[in-house]
Image 1 (cartoon, rainbow, N blue to C red):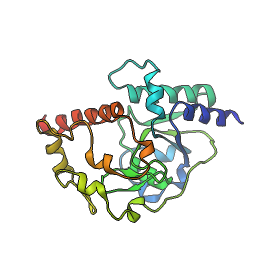
Image 2 (spheres, one colour; image 1 turned 60 degrees about the horizontal axis):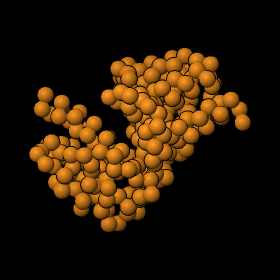
Image 3 (cartoon, helix red, strand yellow; image 1 turned 90 degrees about the vertical axis):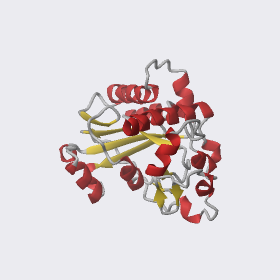
Length: 236
């Protein structure tokens, strides 16, 4: 095992088990154009490193990590990436894109291009391996020569799901085959005693890979966090 492979194993053992290395020259044209228009200096770096997690391992590792901040998930991911760069890559030049950045990289486009996900009626991606139970945790432009590692775009599992229970489970019909309606979802989540305040009933109804479903405390953490963001956006 090479030193870089040891570093990837360290990340995976820590719960960051989705890793993609993309040569910037090989990024899809629409992604490159979007990033360039957003002020991301993608042409100044050789590679893009995309990091995510699927399933429950990251959360269980986080619980014993003693990351004592108001945003422990991001802190945990960033601290692991800092250690990875320092201990396994000799501190190459990197530009953080996500989290803790003024940039807004197209994470879903990137995830689709490396085969992690495809679109779903929930508005978020769906993974052929983890279903709806995965997330993006970090993205960096990096001036390094890592071995490219990526999958290929896959057919959406939703295409073969005939019943689509996620649509029926949404109490306000914000989840539709044609797409997700945030303007219907948000007011309902913000309403008093909403059953969707700390969880998504439609997401919980997805039948794909339930063995990777987050624990309730993780689900509630993420949805309470997003609820705060919605409240700031809609209520000021």
